[in-house]
Length: 332
Image (tube, rainbow, N blue to C red; front, side, top):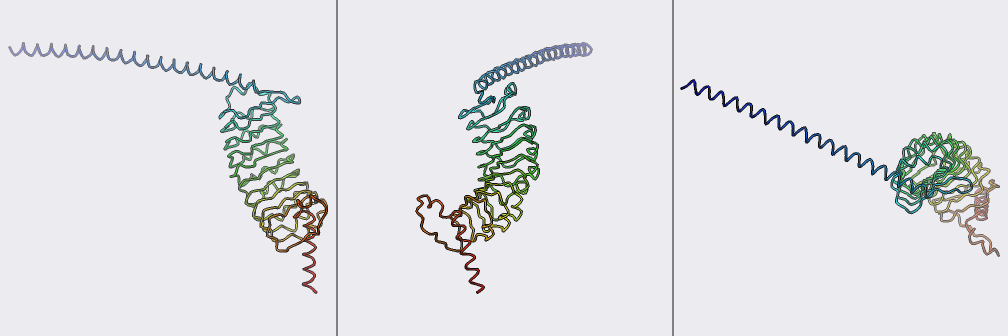
């Protein structure tokens, strides 16, 4: 009786093992089916997303092509007041473009592939929300104008110095730029530089050493003084320094023989260097809204436009004469 029971128990165990094995086999089959089904769904989803991307790229390319114009023989991409937070890679199919004018489109970044647009002469991306200039910008060796005013840029890459043809650079109203890399002094053809409404506390050495610079705007910064080396900018003819905190001018400013326009309004100047009377090429100057220590009254004039020049060139010469007169009186 006991042997029978043991035999029966063994038979039951065998049946259970077979049953368990069958269940596991079925489970494995179903798991493989589910896994394959999931893989198929993923492949299908990836394929659908790829089709969507291809379609979107084609739609974007069509839209971009509609924005291409030709002016004075130059191929220009011109977009304004439309939303293009990013630029699609399909733009690469338009690599013959010579000029981008993309204003108020909400652009967040300059595409990394910008360096592949070797024909670009003008890159105007002003009035967007760009926060960074990619290093690839340095590959644009034919670029003559780079206009990035009214953005959110904080730093400028040294690779920009490789843009050997650059003549005009505008970084105004980015509000947070406080320095420039020394390498930018290699921009041998740069004529025009706008750094107004940023956070510069001094004129960067890179700017002082730009050999061809003729026009500079550093208005509305945090300048407190000008370096003695400002005389290095021998080709400069226009200098805007309004709305800073400049307290005095270096005597060396009189060595800037080509300077024709000098705007110093809304600063903290207390005096005008006597040596400035030697600046014979100076045609326009503005000392308005400075706490100058001497009071100078200009003689009445019949010229109705004279009011605009109350703190101009005539005022400067009168101030210097008064300064000389008072200095002479001290030695009598």
